Image (cartoon, rainbow, N blue to C red):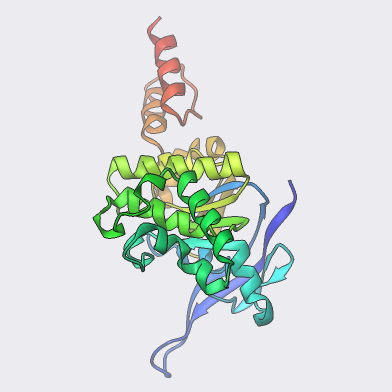
Amino acid sequence: MEKFISVQNLSFEYEAIDPDEKPTEILHNISLEIKRGEFVAILGHNGSGKSTLSKHFNGILLPTKGDVIIDGINTKDEEKLYELRQKVGMVFQNPDNQLVATIVEDDVAFALENLGVEPNEMRSRVDEALKSVKMYDFRLHSPHQLSGGQKQRVAIAGIIAMRPECIVLDEPTAMLDPVGRKQVLKTVRKLNREFGITIIMITHFMDEAANADRVVVIDNGRILADNSPKKIFSHVEAMRNAGLDVPQVTELCYELKKAGYDIKGDIITEAECIDALEKLLK
């Protein structure tokens, strides 16, 4: 897969409100590459800098030092900001902050209208986007009468309609119940696997990260680890030291291994755990 995002020696600081105080540095010399079509989960405890990093991927924030290059575009290039934001869409944790219209299909069409997309093309894109997230049957409903998971899928449809090459999701399931979380995760996986959209998901749910191709762990504004979910979560103590958990099935197998049972330490899915427990019981 070809390189899509290149983060080069990125440091970022927020200016102090009081001129007598020093700026607060949040990110410290981060370098990272993400390939086109990858599904990358970014983990970190509250205040680690993971959301700040995500806002650099479509130019909401700009580096204090270093560069962020998206498909050849430097986010510091103001003349290409419009093009950049067509390549990378953002979905935030509270869908109510992204819903602006009183009818679902109007909400999905909102950004397209601002871009001046021709009406027939707009109609086609809106219908296609709503079908891709299984919300087409709700196209004439009010967004504010939908469940949390349904609202988030409408917000995702609004981004899909713009046809980005990458979608960055900043804790999109944080405010959802288990059913809503499942709906959104299924949609995200489909966008990645069936449509080849690059997915970057900021999350604090370990089971969500276990479904990614890659996991990047941020701790105090620096990259602590970058590897496959199996390799990341097999280091249970290191994750704990970073203030993070591991998937529940990984925790269970880790404790069984500590107790002397012959079980693998890189189990991250329920199916793997069931198979391992069945072998132990035979």
